Image 1 (cartoon, rainbow, N blue to C red):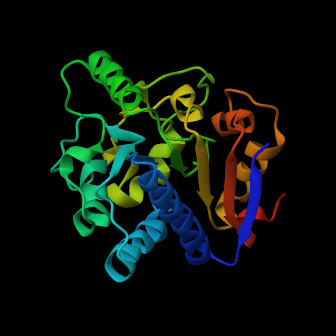
Image 2: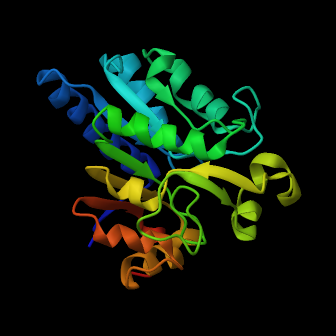
Image 3: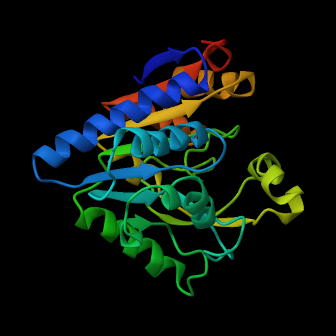
Length: 246
């Protein structure tokens, strides 16, 4: 079962996870290995990315030997689109730390062959030895990445259709649910579960019900986050409001 760690607020959670990342980078560096981080988008990890930037700026944390893989990207949005996840990551993390662009990987939402793009993404992850630490958020549908109900535990990186609830929840970035893309490319549940360590971030009362389901229901495809119960090293980082139903 996932470990539950309650924090005073999202800033405290961000500092705890950022410190964990810094220690991981240090340990991997001492052994001459690169650190491979899986990243998420949306509002939940923003404080974490701000803290990583601070650690780089004020304490000299270097990301030169870190490889990044993002969970997902909207179909139809190119890297320069203001609502693409590539743009999101550039604005909220990548532009402010010391890393070559070649170390950042995000699915290509403009690919002309989604099947080939998704297989290539899987191959890139495997070629660097897999993900050391995967950062996750959780959606109201129980999705992790864009693995909507009814995603199987074995599914891999693939082309998916977004749930209507997810599109409503993401409308704040686009102006209306109708403007949110209907499809995406996402790492699969099976891909996520192969990460050596997982940190899920969830804050606020609006996440309490789905956190409860993810933690208490038997693992099932109707709430994909329940598959995280199968992972040997997964921590849910919550504030009091998100944990209130547990």
